[in-house]
Length: 240
Image (cartoon, rainbow, N blue to C red; front, side, top):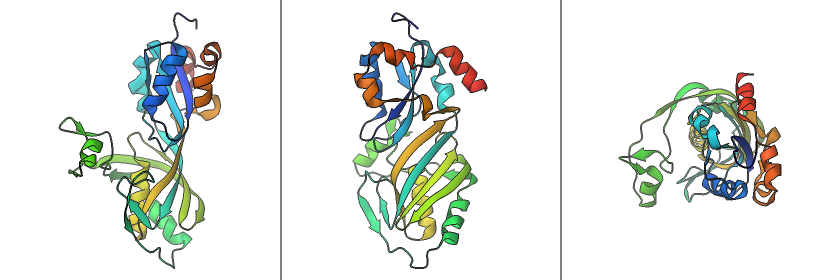
């Protein structure tokens, strides 16, 4: 890949408090290219794998966006928020049952395993009559959202230290982990919101070859280009 023609996939380990668009804007400046997009938005609160497509690789955007994802997250019991995550305002607080045990937690997670329908949150980029839901939410409006068919391939409860539960989930595209945390909280009877999230995999891509945001912003252009996956490499990884 030379300076005149850069085509490939750049894996980024996104930090907190930045949007996916922020990362794309920095990549365009660092690589001196306009033709760069991302495959699957990460909320500002979330960290982890963000796939950037550069040059001719932008044609692969829809294909890469459709692949399954893996996340590690933390939910906090006892509070729900208007965004279903820690960025929102607390709208309800409930006491956590004193008899909450591992069996109850396992049963709640198991209910949201395999095939089921998930209602997207109001604070999302899904559009209603051409208007993103999050814009309607900012106006204090709530509209009916059609449930979406999703699938959880696997889940693991990694840590339970009430009020927090750490978990790992592997799921289909279009899955809202904050809604997953919210719904499990409802099942447990005390409510919950997502308080931390990190995407670790998308399809066969992971964080092993990812570039940090600081490296992207301050690194040498040639060094960044060397870390990109070429189109043949991408085809090989996807077909592995």
